[in-house]
Length: 249
Image (spheres, rainbow, N blue to C red):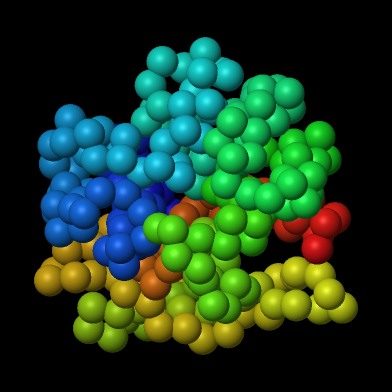
């Protein structure tokens, strides 16, 4: 399957839209973000909006700077942050540790910080899965409010993959792989049917996705179709970050 490349800012917006439309992160501009990301519109405007994503933007800057890439929204940087990739290996562990300390130590208690401080030395990287699996359980916050069901929240917030069964109106029925508890640890479960949003008012990011296609999912939204390489990358980096998270659960 050949998937058309899109500019880095557009790709960032396609992943960022899911939580933004629910009011969890980024500027209050969901309708604008959808339009620009669906149609590949004003890249300058997407860049302006991207800097308002207080969770993601510092990671993008860190990945880009550590790899000598001038643009935090370079397509390679965007993919590394959302899905994983070799650029993450270019971020030295001490540099990542310092970034985590600057950003999150003031927000957590001493006990929680001792837990989070071990992550970069233990092999964590500045990929979205790290933020979801390790930072969120410590801070426990979405826009400053406590979350009730942490497992459900982190499972929705992580970038998941799902194989499309069918399209039903603006929705996609997919077999998605969930997170679950097992003997006090997190693991990936067996695929299960789930209905996700693919289009809003005719606008979406997955083209003519149909049965057999694999899509990336953020919250309840289909972000893009994935090729075999991207699926393998996402699975591998999810497994890596799960292993790091489980060392202190």
